[in-house]
Image (cartoon, rainbow, N blue to C red):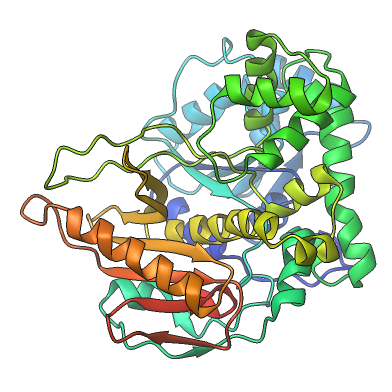
Length: 427
């Protein structure tokens, strides 16, 4: 563990602890640098670093010849970057089956294995899965946490909270992102981290994920195009046209799809699925995914912009701020056994985020930079969607919320809509 940085507790800590009590092994997946290994190290009793310098080839050979040797150690045993030797999966599953014990192994992976042919068993019933992302504002210490999403779902709608984040600070936080190593750095150095991240993606990570050589310049142009479409339900064909028009780059459809798949497999891209509620009318619901990066700083770095650029272009700021909110909402929702979706129908009625819990409860959220005009527009949209839902066939919304970048206070409006600055929200 790196002694230069004090460990900041993560929401994933409790989720991992709970999953270890119910499964023989837990796999933590997520983007590089998001803190998976450090979080796993807090609960591991022994550790195998598969990519340790000078030992990688030896570990890969042992995984084929004598995997049991690699699995020896006090439990939970952390197998870091397990995907380097996918054949370990079946050995771990076998151990989980035959030791008749729980919480034996923690696996971390920053990419999906390129070749799953060596894996015989899916791991169903033996493995638990946990997705980690860069830090939410609550985890990085930038949110006061005065407003709890869990409490709101439990019916405590008389909220009161204070946010200390103004628009320039939010612009900085958007560009800095939630990379744990950046949190305690000086601002100028912290802003470098996202640029370093995408450079690593373009020149190394996307090449290694499946062994396919890809042109770093083409990867960069694709990332920049994807950034322009943050928060939109655009097709691959539309991204391809954008590349041709703005970048002078012509991907064929299959090549573009392979690049996007590779970026998803290393958790750079994380789109949001459509929500499909029961409606009173027969309104057609659009089912395309909404395009997002796993962290907003990937978008700003890909576009080569910084905090001042966002302040000068509030339309772009609003779109990329939405990515920050989706990152945080996903983190908070998973702590509550929930997922984040979006809604859009053929009439153009749209809801930026729907948090749907396993027990059927859900909340509707519109994301706005702030200001009375935008908040009123968001509240109207939420009420229009709530009125369409057939509450004879599903529960009514637990809450309607306008989530903002700015604003000093969280409060409940007279119409019942919650106004919550992201700088005072937590799980």
